[in-house]
Every structure is written in C-alpha cells, then in structure tokens.
Length: 156
Image 1 (cartoon, one colour):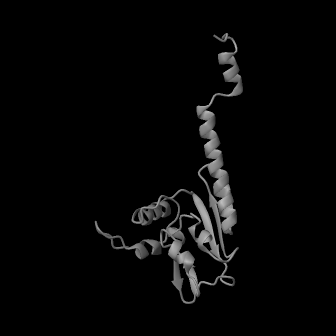
Image 2 (cartoon, rainbow, N blue to C red; image 1 turned 180 degrees about the vertical axis):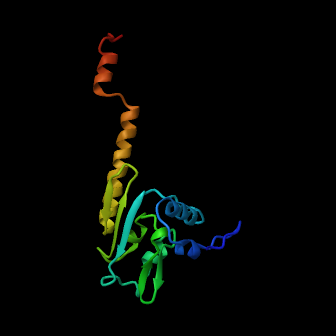
Image 3 (cartoon, helix red, strand yellow; image 1 turned 90 degrees about the vertical axis):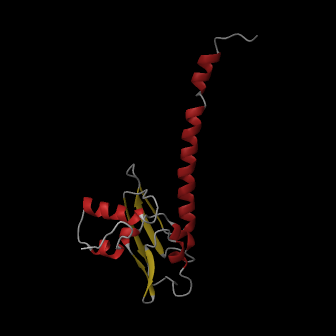
C-alpha cells in the first residue's frame, strides 16, 4: 500500500499497485498531477528498440521527457508506462530514426503513430493546419453567404 500524505506522494508505491480500468486512470492522474503535465491522449504505447538505441552515449530522450517516464537503467533506457503522456518529446530529441516508436489515440478516436522526428513534425503541422482552417471557416463567410448578402444590394 503506498504511503501518502498531504505534501508527498510515493510514486513508486502507486506504480506498484496492481489494478486496472478506472483505478489505473485515477492512479495515472495522481502521478501526472505532480508533474503539472496535461494528459492529452486516452491511450498509447511507447517502445524503444534497444538494439539501435545509443543511450549510453547521449541519453537525450531521458533529458527531454517532461514527466520522467524515461529513465536510465543498467545499460539501457527504461520506460514507466504510467508516467508517459505520449507527447513525442523523446522522438524529437532522439538522434536515431526508428529507435523510439509511439502510438497514441486522440480523444476523437484517431490513432497516430510515429518513430522519426520528421514524421512527428509533419503530423503536428497537419493537425495545426486543420485547426487554423476551422478557425478561418468560423470567421469568414462562405462564397454563397457572401453572394447572398451582397448580391441584392446596388452599388452607391
């Protein structure tokens, strides 16, 4: 049973608890609350290819992780799945393509996967472009609305 007080939470005790479903989501929220990182994805998977990882030389992914889900252990990079928010910071910082693979599910149900910094940047660019287009559609009238509004009025 984890020891919990008002000021501290035993993170490793919370991780060691054996539970699933709602209890696991609640535990994940408790863990992420201390990091002040927002969990944007419902589900996800992260995998590190230990054969191509050059973590001994760089440890860049460990340094880039905002929640400390990646850590250095006995000659390789380890993952604490409950702390990972699948943000992609590790993929962006990794100097080896296809070393870290992330698959995540957005709130709308769309599944995204990437393992190269270029793939991640292209994915985020596509998402941001879609958001900008939605904002423009909300502000500017369509051609039909414009013609309907101004077609019947004579020029002064």
